[in-house]
Length: 63
Image (cartoon, rainbow, N blue to C red):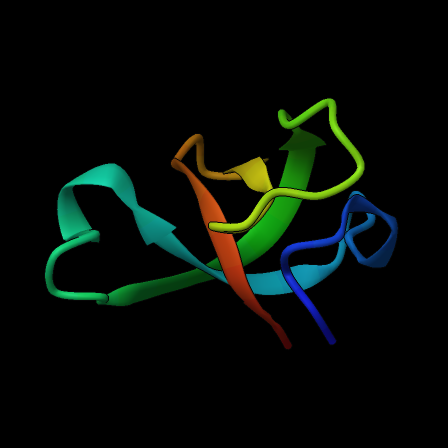
């Protein structure tokens, strides 16, 4: 599934995101989506979400 399209991401689904400070290394962080922060239907770098633990990043993979 594509993390660049908002329609693929639902609240409660498990995702792998890249945090702002991990963008250079590409390190992924796994978690469950609490809020979808990007309002547009798609974004070339991934839809921005907030995880249940409060971390914010862009979706790279849906798990």
